[in-house]
Amino acid sequence: MSTFSPAVRRQLLQGARLAARQGPYRCFSSSVRHAEQPATKAPQPEDNPPRTTHFGFETVSESLKESRVGAVFSSVASSYDTMNDLMSLGIHRLWKDHFVRSLNPGTNPLTSSTSAPAQGWNILDIAGGTGDIAFRMLDHASNIHNDYMTRVTVADINSDMLAEGRKRSLGTSYAKGDRLKFVEANAEKLDMIPSNSVDLYTVAFGIRNFTNKDTALREAFRVLKPGGVFACLEFSKVNNGLFNEVYKRWSFGAIPLIGQLVAGDRASYQYLVESIEKFPSQEEFRDMIKDAGFVVPGKGWEDLTGGIAAIHKGVKPVERA
Ligand SMILES: C[S@@+](CC[C@H](N)C(=O)[O-])C[C@H]1O[C@@H](n2cnc3c(N)ncnc32)[C@H](O)[C@@H]1O
Image (cartoon, protein in one colour):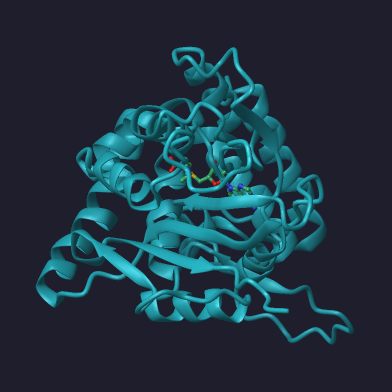
C-alpha cells in the first residue's frame, strides 16, 4: 500500500511523466542514484539539449527540477515544523526572530513623520511555506509599532505547504482579518503582483530550491517599490574549518537519518542537505543580488551561527529625476 498522500502521489506522477519524456527517472537519494548510473552511452547529437540545473548533487533538466522540488515539499509539509526543530536543534527559530527584528517591519502611526494616512507596509513573503516569517512580521508590526495596517502575502509554489500555513494561521488572530493572504505562486513568475508595489520582499530558506535564482531575483526587483528592500535568510557557508567539519558530519550524517526516523522520508532530507551544499557562497550570492539591480548595504550579508545561515539584503534604488 502506498504511504504517500494523494497530493504527493500527484507530484510524483507528474515528475515521473516528465522524466519519462526526458530520460530515466532516478531516485533522490545519492546512494541509490550511484547504483543506477547507466553504463557509458554513446553521445547523441541533439539540436536543443535541455537546460540543466542542480537537484541536490544531481544534474537534472530545468523542467524536471520544479516537479522534484514539489514532491519533496509535499512529502515534508506535514512534518516540516517538527523536522526544522530537530534538524536545527531549535536554532532556526532564533534566526527567524533575528531576521524579522533586523527588518523592523511596520510604522507607528502616532510617530510617523509622513503626513499621509498610515498605510502600513505591503510585505511579500516568498516561499513562505508554513507562515513562520509572516506571523513574526505581523506580530512585530502590531506589538512593536502599534501598526495594524501592515499586511503580508505569503506566496509559495506548493499547495501542501500553503495548506499547512493556512492551518497554522487558524491559531493566530490574523486568520479572520485581511492582513494575511496565502497565494500559490512561482517566485520566478509573479504575474499577479504589480510592479513597484511591494515595500519588503522576504524569502527564508526558499531560494536555494528555485530552478532559476537570477530570474527570481529580477522578479523581486520588479515587484519592489523604489527604496523597497529584498531580504533573504538562507543556509550558507561555514567560515571556520573545524566547525565546518562538525557541521558537515551533522548535516550529512544525522539529518537524512532523522528524516527517515521521524518523517519516514530519507530521500527528501538528503536532497535538503545536498541543496545547502550547492547553494552559492555569501560573496557569490551578494553578487547575484547586485547583478539583479539592487544596491547592497555594507558588505551585503550577515553571518548567523558561524555562517551556517546568512541574511542578505538589497535595496531597489530610487531613481533620481
Ligand atoms: C524550506 S521551505 C521554507 C519555508 C519557510 N519560508 C520557512 O522558513 O520555514 C522552502 C519553501 O520554498 C518553496 N518553493 C520552492 N520553490 C519555489 C518557487 N519556485 N517559488 C515559490 N516557492 C518555492 C517550497 O514549496 C517550500 O515551501
